[in-house]
Length: 241
Image (cartoon, rainbow, N blue to C red; front, side, top):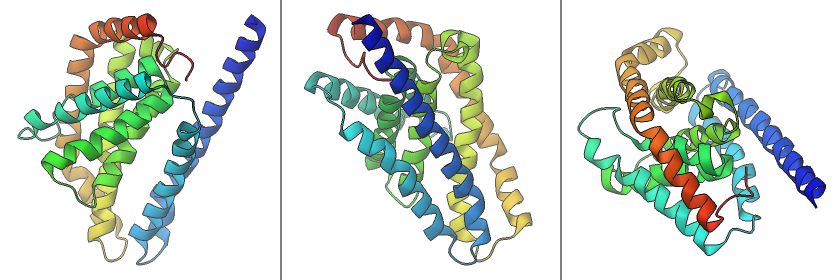
């Protein structure tokens, strides 16, 4: 019995690594290939994003998730979304990324991805939907997914590791979101404009990164205890990684 469970765990691990590798490859293509396609930047980018979404959504759809587990994911997604609203007047400072990281760190990669995608689309009901919404869904979803892949590593088990992860993802989130602006406004690719957009966003990305560090340092330990206690007590999302 134990051997069978161990085999299943190893199989899940390799599946997650395979999906992670595919998503990293698609992310690289998402950044570089559209730049080589004249006047089709946005179309190519959306196509790659859809290709990245599909493996995760199909995999999650085939899981035997209970109603209690769905409620938990919905609640965490709502918390991540609503927590963004009061901070809307402070650019790039919000606890949404923190909640998404904690979800992935406790409940696994796929749950982290779903909560990240939910947080973007639900919060934008209050803050405004637009062409940026799918990009936010993808970016926050990937933050949760990677946090879940790293759940058993030093990055998620130590406060300093979580803080480093939060700092890095704060910048990566901003850089990814810059991409849709660049692809929307640029009629043809220009390196000077491209670098200018990214340079102008530095202080906003830094604010996001530092706010992630603050929330992770101050609240992550208590959140881990609460979420793990809840997970153990009700046996929720214990089989997913």
